[in-house]
Image (cartoon, rainbow, N blue to C red):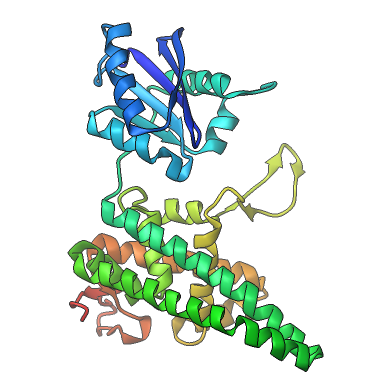
Length: 350
């Protein structure tokens, strides 16, 4: 890419620290408010201070800080700029050995990273508004589930050892728990309504839930995490993203334990995939696979991890072929030994 200017932005809730490089040379440092009006003023002043700068010859780089990025990303995208949105841990590991930090220095380091990686950097593409809405709703659902557990589980434990005290606490929390249950039902209904009204989401949801073990919650989380299977397009990449691919830790003759999954993963998706794998082991071909491997002496959790990988492979195979999954037990074996595809033509969900 023939970018001339590299702008690193350190994003916080209230302010944006900006560093502008022309090649390797720093030409400007400034701080602005993280508000739409301040961004418009910054855009106007930028062309005055740097006459040759434009949306086409400039790369903007920043950390992914969740909702704090929203104003900046929306504004820059509306101007047709080139945006690089990186994970904070990736930027932190790429800058090398450092001593001390502040927002101004962080902005300069982000700009320098953008210059170094200009040939291989992956440009950010926005998700559809409907995906952002789904993400907010699933986050709300997760918070409600955690709150419900935080209230209900201690009550049950207290009742085991102090019935009178437990009943008193239960009566106090009853209204709150009922309200949370109603809110959960409302959130889940909103999620399903959004999916049913959008043809693309409806189709992806239908294919995802056709895979044995993958339920509603897991399917929605996968669709959001992959940005409708646009950002992550292969089973191998998604397995790595989910933290279920084992990595070795060897150096020369030194072997530091067995291969393990990386902690740099989406733990929420990993947990849901584990639950999906356990559900698929209740019956069918996955149960037979699990029993066969464990009878051969394989570690049980290693086999469960293999089942998680199989579910991902099945899902991405069906997504690629735009087909519903057909369980192994339903496939017809033809006399010549040729089987029908694992996925079948999809039908419309009600």
